[in-house]
Amino acid sequence: MQYRIDLEGMEFRAYHGCYDLERKVGNRFVVDLELTTELGRVAEEDDVELAVNYLKVFETVREVMAVEQRTIERVSQNIIDTLCERFPAIVRVRCRVAKMAPPLGGKVRSVSVTLER
Image (cartoon, rainbow, N blue to C red; front, side, top):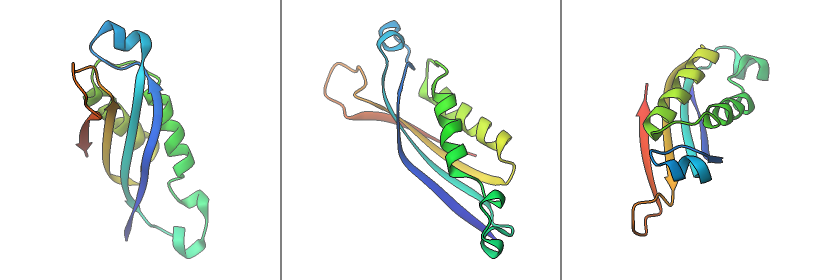
């Protein structure tokens, strides 16, 4: 049996962007994750050590967000790759990375990309 873990609205200050100014002053980013994983004996034994620990997932995302990238596509791909490497029980990841108030020359709340593996 599989189950899904959602982490929604994780906010980070980061320095991703294609413009020098973006990488210098930074911006606010929001990350949403959907993780599908094998249930195994987690529910049966009520043991957090058997589960994909969402605190460790959050810490992993924070670590990846700290690495400057030019595109949010690359950021999302790095998050997915790192999560799949560290948590082998994950069978599917959907990752949405949104840059809040992007510098597009007009009022835009956010721009985002969603990748899935």
